[in-house]
Image (cartoon, rainbow, N blue to C red; front, side, top):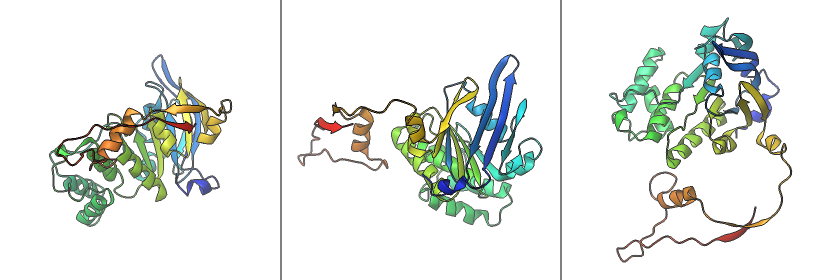
Length: 285
């Protein structure tokens, strides 16, 4: 989690929402949402499909107008100062918005030119290095893996150094390795002072990344707090001794490694692969 999150509470929040409402004809999606996001923090908005997460992000990024309530982003009203809000943010949607015909480097140069930045080539090269995409830079984006495409997509979102970034379910459809890659990128963003509002359906994602977590259910925020505060809502944990078996994800990541470059060597030297064996261990949960 970000170091800046601890001090963000004493400053004007990066995002403030009060009494937000939005309906589509008879469907009431948001029913009076209130939330604040501290600067330099990662704020996770959890909710099932149809809970209103994407609608909230679209309002905060000025793509939709609310029916009622107010919202400020970086101190600017999303309705009255929409242009200033757009200058302060970047939005990464559920699907990578890269041009598959262009190379990774060309995608970055294109966005840098659209933002009227000086020396777009240098901007692109710096981001390729930052996101570990230097070797892939000359290749067409259509040849990238899911994790690489998502990293390129986030890199494109950071051109111009926006102080606030919205990530709408950024790891949907990614494999375990790619999810970890994206998690590392998001954590690094917050360390460098970027405010991140993350929507997700994956509880472990919020648990790994977020400084604060809010649950949006049937158009309302039903709980909002740190992970420790949310855990305190339930009865204290009982101390029991359990036999813990490795999960399939544990096995997968052990075998292939978390960076996709190979993990545990299961070859016994005879040219044949030996079966992987694991022993249950008794641990205190």
